[in-house]
Image (cartoon, rainbow over all chains, first blue to last red; front, side, top):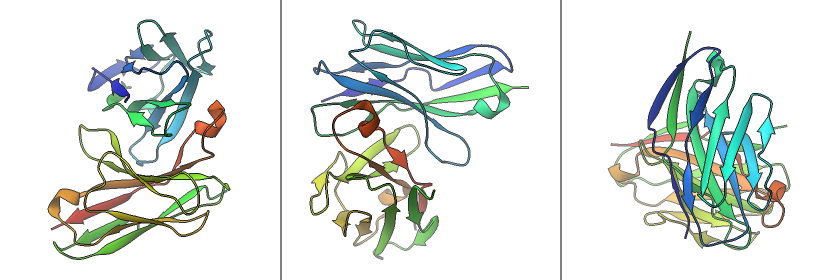
Length: 115
Length: 116
């Protein structure tokens, strides 16, 4: 069984600053995938970034990047040059490649970008 | 591209009433999922279907039934609604197991359900 923990229920940052959202997970698998999803006030779940556990290189998507520390089972999301449109709930999630396809979510971090 | 379409978007039920939430995807995905989202609890898996004709229980299946009608459609039924089932419900789909891309889940816009 997998567990995903997000220890920051809420965060806020000034526009244009950089913010890091924390996520830790626990799994007995060697091969798994990690995701960050964004949920703006519209409620739509949007994939932000993904990472394969067996790849050492941290994933990057424009202003979004991750710091993946496999040994520490940590998968934090860094948002650079934050924008007002980044205001949303952010969920960390994990799935085992050889398991039962069940995506396990953390409880989310509510991020507010302050103008 | 429609992606994953859920109906209805909002619904109010009285305790004991029944209803079916509909979900359809047009991405030819093998796997489909139903989640519920409650404040402070993230998304929890209710049921999923790895392929047409198969369904499996998730973390919180009690009080729900599902039907994988065909490859495109996966419905969630509440036979006798209870106030504890007040929640936001999301349907999702993915291509299934294998590569990272296949494991990405795509979500519908959600259904806000209130049971009085």
